[in-house]
Structures are given as C-alpha cells and as structure tokens.
Image (tube, rainbow, N blue to C red):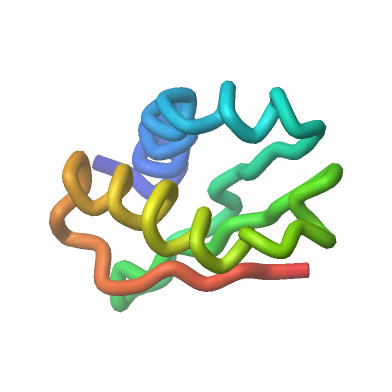
Length: 79
C-alpha cells in the first residue's frame, strides 16, 4: 500500500474518535508517516489548548490506530 493510501485509511479510522473531538470543537488529522512507521498528527481547534490532549493522543488516537495498523511504532504531533 502506498503512503497516501495508508494516510487516507488512517484518517478514515480516526472517524471512530473524531466525533468526540468535534463535540468539544476540536479535530485531528494524520498528515504523514515516516519510514520507521511513526505517524504524524495535527490537532486543530480546541484540541490545541486542551488539558486532555496528551491523554487523547495516547489512549484515544494511538490505541485506535495501533489496533487497526499494528505496524505503527509511534505517534508524534506536528504544529
């Protein structure tokens, strides 16, 4: 699978948690994946200043992606 298709599938998978983010005025998007299978995400809206962002990143986003894409090795936030 090419990189663009993989990123698209990951963003579709994040629809599982995206409704919770939208309810609070935020959003997240997978923007890249590197050769070591680290995934780069971009938060927007209220997620940028949310006190629960790290929890959401690790428990909500990383775990959701890891279940569906076991090859990923990490999750990094870009600004």
